[in-house]
Length: 246
Image 1: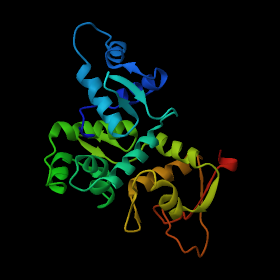
Image 2: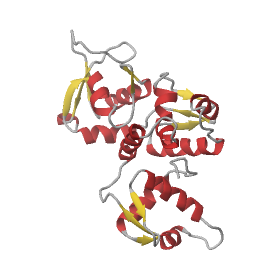
Image 3: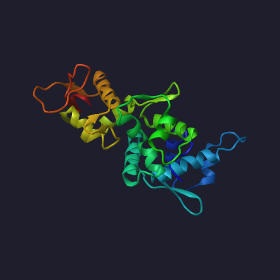
Image 4: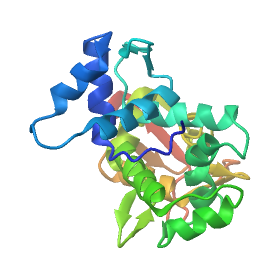
């Protein structure tokens, strides 16, 4: 079973938190906790989320259908993205998990494309060896929006990382000062892909510049710096995180 599950996003984090709180919880008990109405059946939704979490190696379902957490720490949005990057690096290009975990990179970062209207067409054009249904593409968009990598807009996907995602990454980095280009290459790219052949994806650039506008970090210009500058007028090439900005 692959990462291409019909999930909506919020249930992934909620289920993981419940499993972490109640290690070894039975599948049926987990479903009962979230089945608010007697009518209807949410078991398929729950199973899809469990399969997704199992593929990311966050939970394990044993033979007795008891669910165990494989990580006791709080899992934030960027942790999911880090795990997806690990999945991409450990699978071959024909694997469905590789496709799921690299769609953002291949469809948005590589062409430096912020918005795609028909993601279904573009995904199947790029990954022609394996058909991806419209339903799975829609689920991918919902999950990526939940993780903070973009927004579902006008039926397509706008790959502008959410400010709360970028702020949480910056907070995780802690005190740091250096060339803005190295922030992208050394600090953000290891969490989720934003670099292609040395070029930084515009969506990530815009998000970081916006953090500068709200004083989450401090942007400045240093002369004769052998690194790329960013901004409409290429006015920023240095960044300071923490200290007075914490």
